[in-house]
Image 1 (cartoon, rainbow, N blue to C red):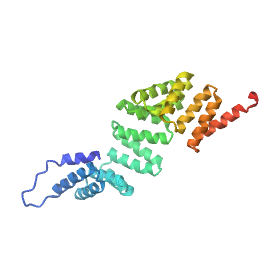
Image 2 (cartoon, one colour):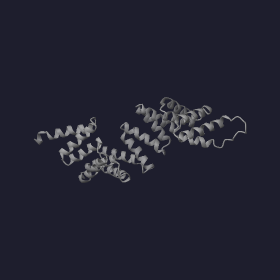
Image 3 (cartoon, rainbow, N blue to C red):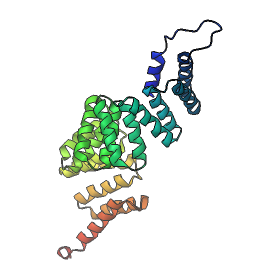
Image 4 (cartoon, one colour):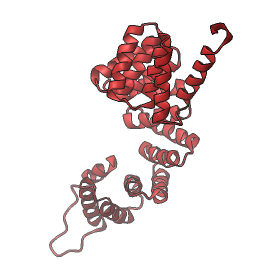
Length: 286
């Protein structure tokens, strides 16, 4: 709804009609926008949508108003009218980045990630300084497993806002997947220094320390994660991995069994248990 306030400001200096005169379309539009903006600010979405719809009927060639109507339809759980409004905004202003982003969300929610990716990429290219647009692009790139491109987008986010801990956490995960535990440690440490209760970052930190063979720090980090979130299947699986690195097989098994008790569908824990059983029953260990 960034465009809403702009619409108010652009019309704030409209000339008031003489006493008793009929308000002009521009003045009625202003009244609807002001009323709609106030309703939106107070969380009265249906009323805001009613006012903005009335405003756009008076100014049907205003792309910013169509974008606002699309946002309000989306907030009101009306995806098809939202899509139509965003498309109308783009016909009127083909370089309106936020409307591409709105359409991207429509397609993402319907599982059409390839189309969403292109729409998010267009939005971010038109307004690369908008963190929200870049954040949506990075999210869909991760969903599509386009990790190098996701990493570049996340790095752009951190460059725009060094305090974006979600982006830093995701960069840490990508570094782990890329076999760069030192870089992962750097990102995860920044996250836990900013937010000491970030259980997932502590868990990732434990795994990264284990990858470089620093098992003492790995144990400390993963135990901290477990204390913060004792029922997380992901954290419990990492507890087992750190234990396995230390050849504490019973502890590893217990952690993975606990993970599966928490989430029976959590495949990494199940796969680790199978690998452990195969290892401990191999002929070389008999």
